[in-house]
Length: 281
Image (cartoon, rainbow, N blue to C red; front, side, top):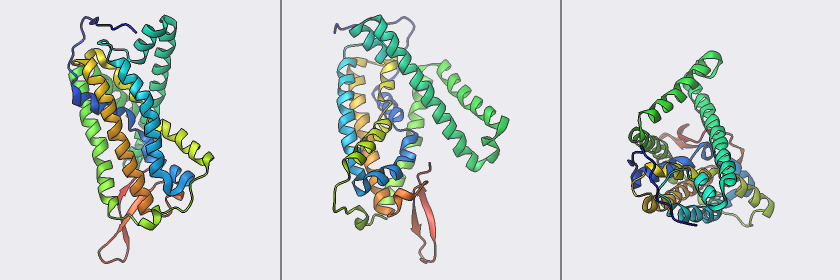
């Protein structure tokens, strides 16, 4: 594949290494981590945390390919541009539309999940016209940020990533104190069919990394930063996923039957339990 170095007129190169790492983490970590722990536990039991490692290794093979190709381009477009230069306009057209359609579907799912979560605090937000207005405000705000420019978009991604990852780290930190080693003990390996089903589901949880290659044309030194951010972000996500599943499996013996997995920490008096953190589906 020939190296390309054309620079589109008008694009501001404002995204640095940490912006790209944040974009990678934010693109991969989605709604899946909020319902998958119970599903994975139901399929492979205590072997769940290790299923994430296997899925990460499999995903890494794709990511390394993207990292290699992205190191040859200064321009944006991501999968579209790679397919275009490697296989021609028709392949680029097909890949471009596939990426666009999948992102539209993912955005719709995330917006729907946002409204359902918000309805727990503001019930009216999940019904009728209020729901529609809420979705319009959400999408309109994100569109406005993008219109203002890449600097605002990068800053927003950084803030959203911190807001997304920090609660997960708090979940891990609190859950580690509630792990019961007996819940992680397993005398037998999971069934092959269940393991394959879990890996299929986890492929969804690790998906989305290709999104961060699209704005390469707005990145400082993309040939250097994009491939490294891809790999670094994937390792960060894999570590978070592994620890989430480990703490959930270790703290909840009935994790597989929990539609909204949560770790409950007993009060000091020991008379009742309070919710310390929750993974809500």
